Amino acid sequence: MSLNSGLPVKFYGVSHVTASLTSRHAQLGMETFDEDGNKYVWAYNAGNSEIGPGLGCVLQLGVSTAYSMTLSAVTSADLVVGVVKHASIPTGNYGFLLTRGVGVAEMGATSGSVASRGLLEIGANGVFVPVSNTTGNKAPAVGQALEAIVSSASGSAFFSVY
Image (cartoon, rainbow, N blue to C red):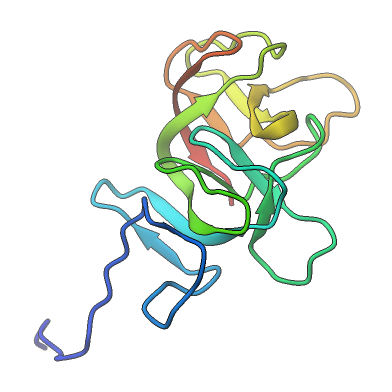
């Protein structure tokens, strides 16, 4: 069997952000990989703030479209759908979110520090916090720090969000 099937091949730049979709763009929820094996999903920023690199995204409440994202409004209670790795995604724009692989975790100002190999969960406004072992904690661990990261700083982490 030949690898040359003659079918068209589409390549997607995972740092691409756009305000409007055409037939040449990915469809919402489409997954792709980069050359390093990191996995991404195409999503829409339905929130009211830009989502910058190192921030986690959650599902936007009250929308009927799957893969409509926003920043989390609460700490330790949301399920992360992806992390912005490359370019900021402005409100009302589409972009790729890292769902599995190595990226940057932006720690919250009051979240404390996480040790190397420490587990991360989502905090308010899309920042990450160390996994809390307190009663009532509802958020799953979505990443593991590859280095020690202090509060208000960013550092490398491995993410596996779904």
